[in-house]
Length: 136
Length: 427
Ligand SMILES: [Fe+2]
Ligand SMILES: [Fe+2]
Image: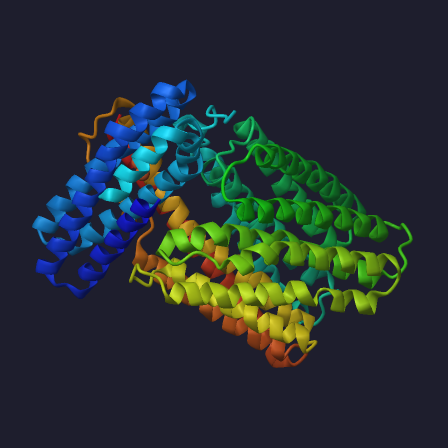
């Protein structure tokens, strides 16, 4: 949860830099955002989801959906990288807007369905994962 | 055990379901504008006159409720993890009966035709019942933030009460004897505005305001009290009307009005602390709506003219806020559904434009400007109703309502065409 909020803040920060039109700080903000999101996907896909799937079979289908949305967001992050490199303000605005909405509905689904599921099913292992998630 | 079956990409309804609601809705605003243009000299003189009743129902049912139904069918799977059962069929039945029922009812109210009134009442009864049952089933299975779900359930109760009271009043128009008619009319209006619309704005706002612009969440003290207070006030008011104490029944609504005013203030305050810097048209619509709710609450306490309140709430908030939301929802849905085949294939080789091309911000600004002009004209018309100036202003306002609705139709058409042309390119 806290991590989702961190990504929200980073995205908003990138938008703020974009509005000021200062490209060097925009590049830095976008890089920070991209790195944080990719890292969060990695933790979910390599640690949280496999452990959840192991103890809770019914989670397989939602996990599948979440992973495909990760792939969607990775594609958008690539677009963002390219648009920032090209100093294309219009494209950056559109990509960040799209990414924002995609992330919001994705996180909402995780927070209301998957994380509570993980909470219940992985009560013990959950403590360990939570520690890993918050240690970043 | 937790039910995981609810979460799959397929649970989102086909894009046609919400889009058909969204795209038909502005035509009712267009009709309402036409009535204002045609009957400008009388519409805002008294809320009891036939054209005023017709305009009210065209906007409240044809525009507002239609958009809200489409949005709920779309949003429930995402926000509440609760797909609406048989959504395609339920959507079709709901929309067909809502649209025809609204037309028949409005024509009946306008012309006094008994057959139209009867037809309109039965169709609306059928359509809204279908809607309430389907969404009600979804909401019983819903997961998610309890306060949002509670507000949505109360909103549904508000719709049921508004419908039942509306049907009772219709029976009265058709000859049944109702004592203390004015009290029952006010009650119908209160359940519709505060119960259905107000509660839904509150419930959706809890989710959408922090989500859209990255703001802090609504404070606990507010989300705990707001919806129950509104419901309690409405129930108290209903009891008092039933006991024949119509005067007191009005004042019983005070807590509900204050809750809505507080919601407006809290919302603007949260949005002031937002992290996303851009002021987009959706945000402008939120601000104008929240401002209008505050002004209306003040007017209500001061016992201001009902016709002016009607303009501010129904045209200002009831048309404005859904319009602002449509700009975002339709753009995102278009993009999201276009991505679907690539998501299934897990290949993102085809890159296509992002959200902003579906509803260009420049056009949205113009649409908002027309909306503002219309609101100013109709407010002035409401203030000077009865004078010759009032009629001109109301007609001008009607023309502006039509222009705003046409612009929205145009933007939606553009969005849909872009969606289709990209969809074709993708094969
Ligand atoms: Fe995720
Ligand atoms: Fe996540």
